Image (cartoon, rainbow, N blue to C red; front, side, top):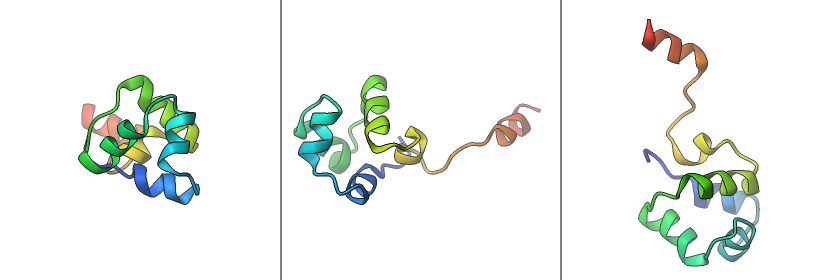
Length: 76
């Protein structure tokens, strides 16, 4: 993953590590490992976290969103 803003988005929502873990059906240790150590979540966990935080997963875990126009320009 290029960037990890999980902690930033979690704190903006006023959510503790324990609360995010509970709502994403994982452990506090897993959330901490993702936030502090750059552990990559599984696809299903990535989706659960993004749903809990109400954010696009790309906003949380990547430097920027790649737009449809940018993708088309690269393939041309």
